[in-house]
Length: 459
Image 1 (cartoon, helix red, strand yellow):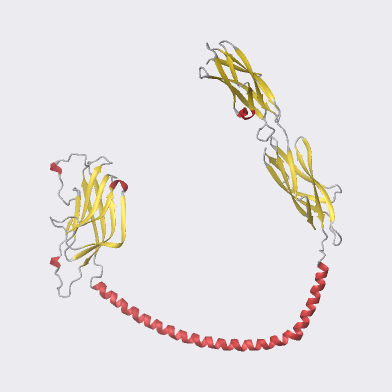
Image 2 (cartoon, rainbow, N blue to C red):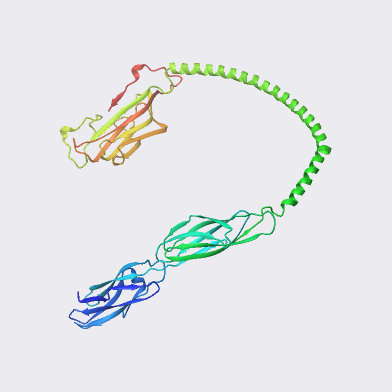
């Protein structure tokens, strides 16, 4: 570090909206002529300045600059002791030194209150809302009360007191209620004041007015007279005009209701007879359908016996040399393929497939369908899965997969990487669920004997 710096004095006091100054003394302790840039650090940097901002000093020379602090008169500058620093940056050595001091910001109080509405109307009471803004830089605990010069009113304030932070506002509901009421006459003006009481300060008065109205509005008596006259006219019209016509209309309506009721009763009786006949027909149809279902079940069913078979395969990783003596037999659970051959007079219908990768190995697993001949090629890959994407994978087909008689279903495993130690072998399997049904027979073909069915599972 090629410079030293110190603030004089190191403890300052300033009022919001005012100004405080101090000096920063800089000494060049290097061996060359240097230029030092000065700037203020900390919270006060937004409202502080340094004059001049640059000092050029010979080796061993010393100079001073003036630091001015001008905090605004705002709630954003709270009353507190703020640490400040002046950084001295060397342009030659690219190093800096910081001179520190404390700035004591004093508090100020600025409370503003406004009542809405300033003039209210009511017969028994009136509602006002008082807004109190704390524009100072310290929290305020205020209490609101009401008074009128003639002591003829009561006031209810909710809440009575509030704690208001700097830069915030609080709202008070004030209900002004005159102690006396009157029934007739012009409105009476009731003037009053709301007092905002602050700690260690005189109350802040806010003027307001209530216009108290009479209890009976002007339109009440004329309306009562009009209603009485209308009631007399209605009574006269009832007895002279409406009552005879209503009696005649009531008799005609009663006769129509009786006729309509009789018609509905006849229709209901016919509907009940038709429902009874439909129920009898439905019962006969149900008995016949139940007999047909029993005949189908007794004959072996449409779908055939259920099918549930598990094909398992194992394989060593591609990067591991296999021992020829350990080569598994094709179709065994120790080989990388496993298959099932569908009998020639059957059709395998698969509705659910459940794939298993219990060790979480990496590689591929294929379920194939082919014609089970040495020269045949796979005529369809039913599904191709990446082992690393699942441990258990369940598939349900709304449209089942069909495998013709003589075809085979093969599970082919290609292991790329093991994820668990042990016998150094990837192991996977698939569960096949569905049913076996017989092939439809041509009309000129006889029923095959049970010896024609061959099942060659290899799992």
